[in-house]
Length: 408
Image (cartoon, rainbow, N blue to C red; front, side, top):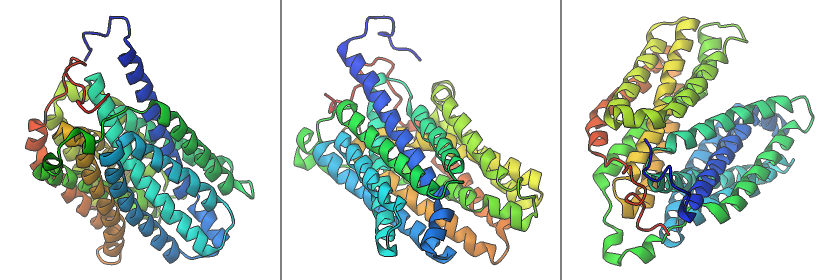
């Protein structure tokens, strides 16, 4: 989809949009790389702190809970100061927490640094989506798939970074410090180039600020919850299932997660082009159905090859549905886009906890394989929300007619 102004000489506003797009991409890169470095460094950090798996589980759960708090903080800051300030804040918080995690500190300081990192994580999750929707609206075409693809590619790079420094005695610390520097760099760039908005407190009278599209928030929020149930299930249990339950060789077991992430990346790169061609509703229906089938294959066919294929198909949901859902949520109410996105983002963490914890509980009963029927059912339930996506306002082709009235 092209804008009528694409062939014209760039105006200052076009230059500002391009810079904002690059700055938001940098924020997504910092987010994806930082989170990947943290989770892939957990074995080394666990050994350094001399703690067990149960303690690591509690820390990971704590990060999810403080991330939800970070999303709430992002909403409060965005309402008063704009999403630009909220995103810079989240990146700075991460930049401060990551070096502390990297250092050999007493356990209480280590755990507190993880909690602070979670706050920054949630703040960036919400505020980056707010900024992404603002820039997307300014361009008048879909861009969120590309932003999320940048985060996925950076996550792969982060895992490779940890792998590359693993032989060093201070490898995890080096990787975490690098991630902190990148987060700080993204904050400095973003502080200058992120899209500027007039805060809701300034743009709207008090009587209008609380008028949110609550039905739409719940509908899109439950879609995000379902996607993250599947994402967390695959991320947490795919390697365990292949190695422990299906007796796959040690080098085969990680291929399930690798196949999942590869499909997530490819589909995110394609999403921005598929939305205008297929429409949001049809694309959501296809993605949810394909991923539900993938999880069903994992549950019903206990063979390594079948499971890897199933994990790959499950990646379509995270690849397509996350950017499409946040994009649709941001269009529910232009004036309240930041507030809507922050609330929808909260469902992210509920889904992540359910996918990791509930599947772990079911693993002690029917087993991990059948437990993947839970994300299959959750993804299939998204089909009930398809009419919401069909009714979501489409982006205007003309840039001038699609700008957020609060953007300056």
